[in-house]
Image (cartoon, rainbow, N blue to C red; front, side):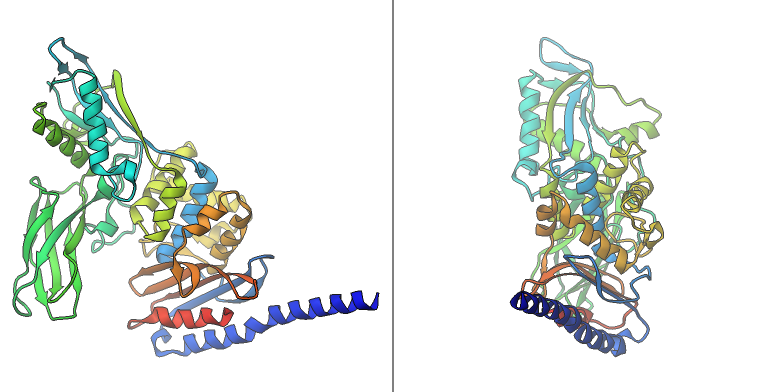
Length: 468
């Protein structure tokens, strides 16, 4: 009995040391951060939980709502897993209306019916690559005996409506690949590339080498200037949704290693229809213009109802989508998932309804809805506000779910921890999991808003290093 009491006492003492030991280190590290000159005018929040019990180990400003940047993706992806299921797949259908004559003429239109798949045409998945999708569509068209199309190629982008950008996104982000708007018919992750060549001296004009793929229906006004050696990429595209005129502004440094910049497709449904039309033309299968459901509606025309399905393309599983969503912080995926969550909840698939569905989902699990002020799915909006305690509690709750392994696997490695990073103008944040060498498990969320200067991430890591 005495031996048993001794073992219990040592165990309690060991746990007490575990519970207390990080606190002093964390507090000192946190105080060093807030005393730093870069944090002089900033708001900093830290919340560390015991991952096994959910109890707070250390917290400061944990109930202040802060701009999350991409750490919001931890909440969007957890909600998507919970509502849609880890095996959920999107579907895109190719169909036609009208009839096929004996000579192979389709007396009608080809219709690409978008189902919200953010991976259609993406290079990240073998089954979704642009050439694979186009080949599948061509094969289905030929199998139906279609040799000519009297009507149009229509990209049906009606499911998610016409508002592609969440309210709260800023003008500097729109037009660039990371600020590409959503659509129920996305294509190639709604982006294209412009390859650039710097001038011979600082301030000289930057030349456009090529656009990949070619974009004959867009006009690009190049106002880029050459930056000094080492200044890197400070080039931005200004291209509004559904527009056809892009301005390139900023600088492109001498000696830069990458080929160029990626822009947002202003009308992805149109580009999908355009690429199919172009592919068919190369195979001598003629058709009329490429268009979209949105464009037809603007022209006062009715979008034809399909009479025959030709093929259906399924996306990768949600687990694979969320892997890249968090690993590479693909903003487009977050906006598509948010609208899909609203759709699944029986609401009009809009950003606003999706955000409300996310808040309702976690409120039903015990969180205070006022701790979640969500305006988008990716965190690109500086108006989104979430407390570090709410985010940490979500990270704690999901550990019991059958999809948790896939969820945690999507978190990148940062500072030797499984942490999702977030960064927008003067905002830097990290959220995720850490297991120390003794097997103690932690959940950590750290966030700083309105800091000055650069290199703040290393200072946030110094705080989290107190857990090691």
